[in-house]
Amino acid sequence: MAKVINSSYLTKRHRYQIQTTIHEGALAVSGEISWPVIQFEKIQPMIAVEFKTLAAWVDQRGGIVGHIKGVIITPEKSMMFSTTGAEVQCHFWETKDEPKDNGQIRLIGIVFNIPQLELEEKLMAIFDRLEKSRK
Image (cartoon, rainbow, N blue to C red; front, side):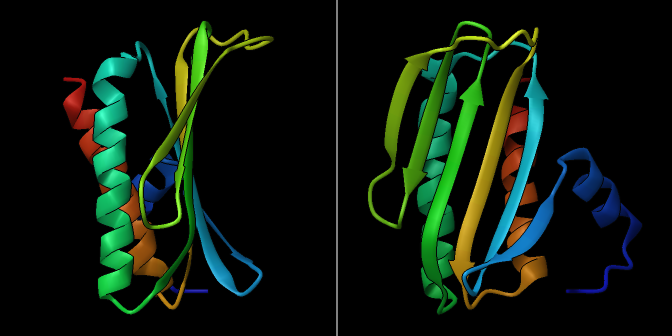
């Protein structure tokens, strides 16, 4: 695994609960944030653009997208979205047994041939942009 020195990087890594593992030879980088009020009609197109952009970046860098996935969970309803590099698929369902007051946004990128720190930085940048959009 990579050695990280930058304290700003470590702060973001902790805030977004970034975790990296190896999954069948691919890097699997995941993270999540709490979100007080989630407006699906606003966030759904944003996430679709972020996923397409991330998949294109992986491709341009010579990597391979295994899967880019995410889930948004709220007390009322939830949304799952995923891509393998083409279109972003979305699926909604009614949330059951989720006692949380806040929503959660959880993302994971499973890719081959991309350096760990670069992929983590890309995922953190997505979370940064999502957080800026709610202000």
